[in-house]
Structures are given as C-alpha cells and as structure tokens.
Length: 334
Image 1 (cartoon, rainbow, N blue to C red):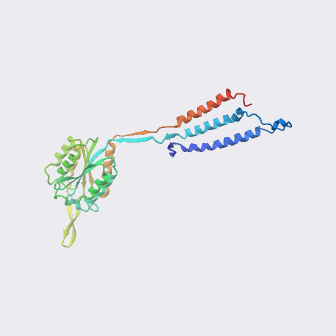
Image 2: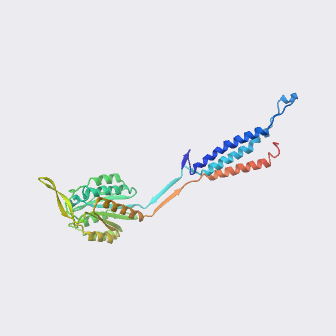
Image 3: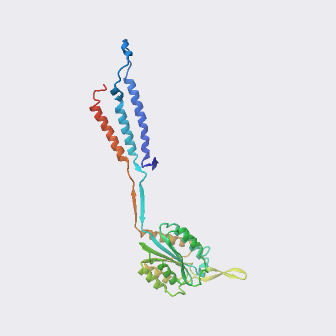
C-alpha cells in the first residue's frame, strides 16, 4: 500500500492508466488540426479584428470534462484511504507468575550450563515473546519470596531474572511455599487468565504449606498451574568444590512427578518433563501456545475509504458534459 500526501492507496497500480490521458489529449489535438483546413481570402476585411466568440473558446469543454472524469475514475480505482485510519487490537491480557526453584540441586549440569541458568535463559525468551502480558517472578528454595511483582515492564523483569542465583536464600525445596507465594501474587489480578509456571528439579522437603494445599488454593482463585520437572532420568553430574578444584559427582535425580502432575491436574494445567535444554524450550513454547489459544483476541480494523467522492465527481463531470452538449452548446459551436 502506497501513501501520497497523507492518503494511502490500496491499489496504486491503477495509476499506470493515467498514461492514457496524455495519449488521448495528443490524439484530440492531432484530430482537430486535421479537421481544420486553411482558407484564403482576397478581401481586405479579413485583416480587421474579428469579434471574439467566447463560445468558440469553450469548444474544447467536452474533452476537458471527459479527461477530468477519466482521471477521477482512475484515482478512485486505486482506492484512496484516509491516512488517519486506525487499527486497534484489544486483548484480555494474561497474568503470569514464574516460580523457579533455586536450590543447590539446580546447579546440576545435565542441562547446560546448568539447570538454573538454562531455566533462566529459556524463561527470558518466553518473556520476550509475550510483550502484552503482565509477568512476575517468584523464587524458592528452603523458603520463597517475590523477586519481581507482576509487571508489564519486561526489561526490569528480565534484569531481575538474570540476577537470581543459588544461595540467595536458605537451601531446601519448599515447593508448596513457592507455589503459594506465586498464587498470592495473583490474588488481586483481574485478568481473564491467571497462570503460574512452576519449575523444580526435586521433591518438597520443607515449608509450612504442602504443595497440594497450595494447589487447592490456586484452584479456588482460578489460577492454572503448569508444572515443569527439570532433570535427566537417573543420575546427573553435580559440581562439588574440593581442595583439588571442582569435582563432579553423579547424584540421583529425584523429581516427584506424581506430586507435580497432581498440582497440574487440580488447577487445570499440565505437567511437563524437561530432560535437556531443547525440551525445556519446547515446553515454554507449548505453554505459550496453550495460553494464546485460551484468550479471545478481538481486533478492530477501520479504514476510511475515499474513492466514493471521486466516483461521484466523475459521474457529475460526465453528466455536466451531456447537459451542456444537449442544451447550452447545442448548435452553438457549429
């Protein structure tokens, strides 16, 4: 769509037809020259000034009106539209809280560079892909706290996300507390869809709120929980500091999948298992699509068409030419 002088044209290709106008005008001039011959006179009176016939001056009215009508029709066919036209999209935003485990076991390196960093990087990409949603961040280990409340300022959220690391709080895995804190951040939300993404690599070992109790609270508050278990099957390499540097030990992966599945089922969410970086990325993509499918998006498109006045102008010009030809100028220019 091209724009000229504040007006947009949906079909600017029709302007090529304007090349017909000078061709028609040239043909008209050539035709008149052929039709008007020369006349020799011997009388001296032929050199006296002749009284001007203003009607004769207007003998070209017909071609002028027709060409103006043609130009108007061509511009109308190009579909001019008001440059002040607007498009407005209204969406019921989704409020999302990401609750991530930062316990010591999240330093295991079955995901690269480790579970915690992989989870952070992929979650940040998820945040960037949802610019219209309010998103918050809760971290938990032996206890839980809100790293970032719900916000549309995703630059601030991403910076806070990058800053989380193991050791910020007492070690442990308080899954119930992490979920309860995330749900609490959504209690004042008026969004059509309220979501918690709960990411952990272990089992609930501490905290005053059992995970199932937190799930029931989420259900009452109409919060949907997607749970993600992070870690390979069996054993994972875990870095241990020794006098001889970092040594790796193979530690068992103990994800309570039954509990995470139960949380998801209670709240109407879904449980996922991420055994590597690619699967974790795919999980976030699936959650992204699931939530987009649950929100009705209404888009309003309004374009103010401007072709009708030009079409009417062309009709009026042709009508004027017809009226003048059959009334005022009838027989006058012969």
